Image 1 (cartoon, helix red, strand yellow):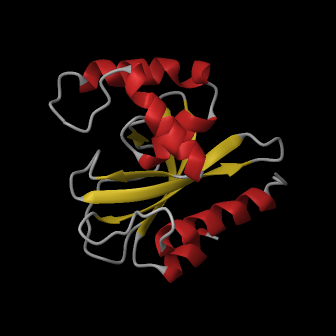
Image 2 (image 1 turned 60 degrees about the vertical axis):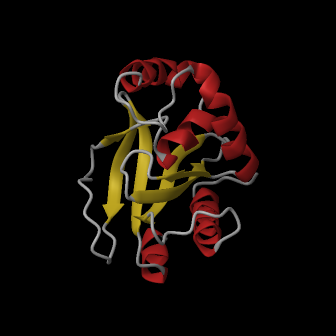
Length: 168
């Protein structure tokens, strides 16, 4: 299903799990456009600044994400990025937006010129097990909630969820 999504776009695709260090890449398909990002299996993304991480932040129990989030907030407090999350209170609107749209988006948060949309994959118990993201150049990657990219990501994650037994 990832390959089908990839064939329908020119964008990159990232599949992540929640690992011991947080949002961890397990599969990556390079964009067919000349966008260079250093991603490979095992790369750990920011939980608060990446679309993939925000999916886990929203759908995993807070107790599972707390340590990673608190560490990120401490580190981001000194990096000068105006988009950085500075407190746990800053997460509430992010979580609410992600839950409302059942998808997360970022526009140049972690990597200045890259935007992404990510959605959860749920298992047969209704628990998030994966996050699938589509990413591209911020200048022309459409992150609107009702745009083509969002519809494609939603369709793909719904299909993968159904294959692993999700019926919700």
